[in-house]
Length: 60
Image (cartoon, rainbow, N blue to C red; front, side, top):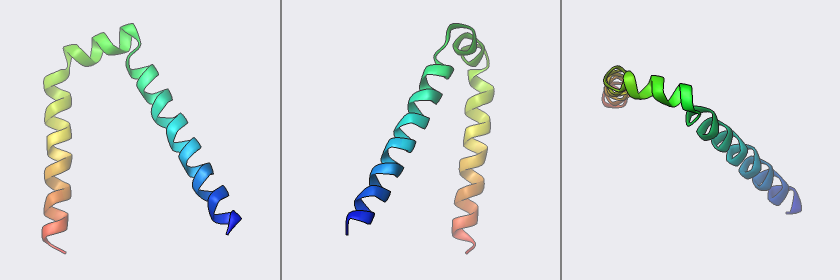
């Protein structure tokens, strides 16, 4: 039973650290400015990936 708590705690900490690091890196001045300049491209790429995932779910 305690093993489950350790596993859940480990996953929670690792995921929390990962998302924190990604947020800090992507909000850095130069990177953030580059993302803002290319926001239309980022939106199109993200939309394309989501459409492909939706098609995959529909065709299963």
